[in-house]
Image (tube, rainbow, N blue to C red; front, top):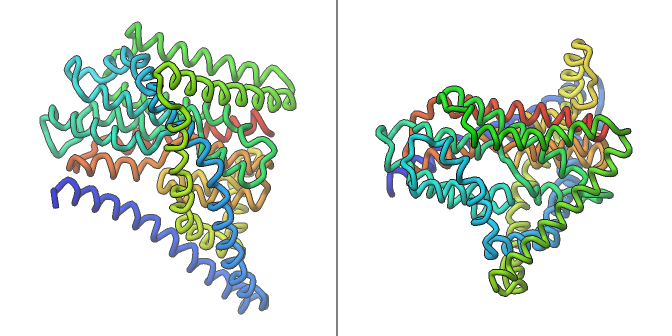
Length: 426
């Protein structure tokens, strides 16, 4: 077995062990809480409630996963049209001038540029299956010019922090979950997620750029960041200038227009490329069923553990404790039930997804908390998992400041998600 593959597997093993301990901890804490309530407070029904929660949440996890098949098939088919229609290549050409300036240590025309640009473009379009292989290819190409093969280069760190920020134009998975759980408008969180991921990406980029002393006053860099910031500022200004009902209404309208625009753009691009659009859609949609089936065990595992913890009273105690702390600071505490999702997000995508679904079941998919956990889930990516996979693939042991900058992006993304949740839906 090549050493890089072995190291990658060891890194993934460590990440899985973190989730393993969280999963075990939730179940053991549920049992301990049950013992306390039964033997100290005389609640003899608590163990039955905990046991029943395992059956209920297992069934719910299965139903949700299977119900995802239709919408996942739809969007995976649309994304395949965009991929074959050259949309990813078009986006790569647009951002190429910016990327050549933020990776100054790479020679002009280096092969890694193409892989990185394609990876970022695929990530922004939600094509995860294409993004990961392209990202690993970019890491291998950057490793060729890396003078210390065990230490992360500046370019690697910048690239991975941008990846972990999770900037996504089309949050397909989150909208799919909301649709499956009966949201009146599954796309109403589209705009807040887009803004939150932008803030996460900017925080990560700036933190790395400052450490690496990148010339932020460069005309292309200033123009790119300034243009994006002006667009985001315009959206926030509009959100602050109109009543809450109009903000929610027009946010949903804009989201619908943009998402329909993406579909039309992909189809037109496919027509221009003279591909068989229908066959491309079918080819991508076939993966919807396999993807939905693959989610089943992971979603059931985390939902059962969280359900047991909630039935034991542990989750309420945790939320009330955090609410009490924030209340002492004089803050509104309506966001507190979303914090378990936020805390899990950098550690495990599957774990955070389970926390999100649990919160939507508990409070309602169209409640403030239900929308907020969706925004939090889409605000950033799974930092520790991504760093383990990408660095492990090229034998990098010394990650330098990559974790710190990745967590800065996570913190800013999640904080922005909470503030945007209040702005759009509270």
